[in-house]
Image 1 (cartoon, rainbow, N blue to C red):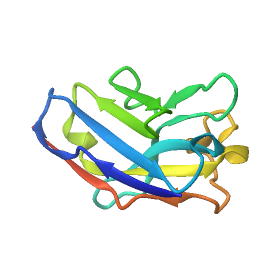
Image 2: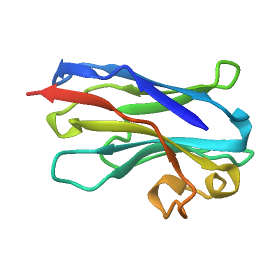
Image 3: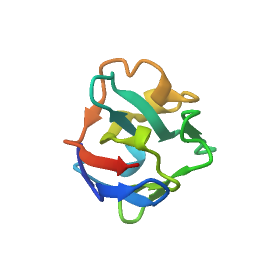
Amino acid sequence: VQLVESGGGLVQAGESLRLSCAVSGAAFDDYAIGWFRQAPGKEREGVACISSSSNRGKYYTDSVSGRFTISSDNAKKMVYLQMNSLKSEDTAVYYCVAVPSFVGVATRWCFQSLHGVDYWGVGTQVTVSS
């Protein structure tokens, strides 16, 4: 599976951005997709993800809950991350990540071990100036 992110950029605090992830090379339903980020000097962290379970649950890390929204368009094989009320601490490289559905079926899978079966895009830079 191949993942290509787009939509990053430089914005001021309080503004919005929408990141997009184009998924190819595999059946969309065979994978669960999430967004991770890595800020300078920090470890990568899960931001938001969609479960591959029948309820398609959506999960967010506490710091973005209420500000970010993850969504998908299965027909277009796209996953989005709408980011509102951006803060300087949101500055990071954002990555689209795919895991097989048997991993992605877990509740809050993006905040747990990915079991070494994860696929990553090259990332897109988001910079929020205060």
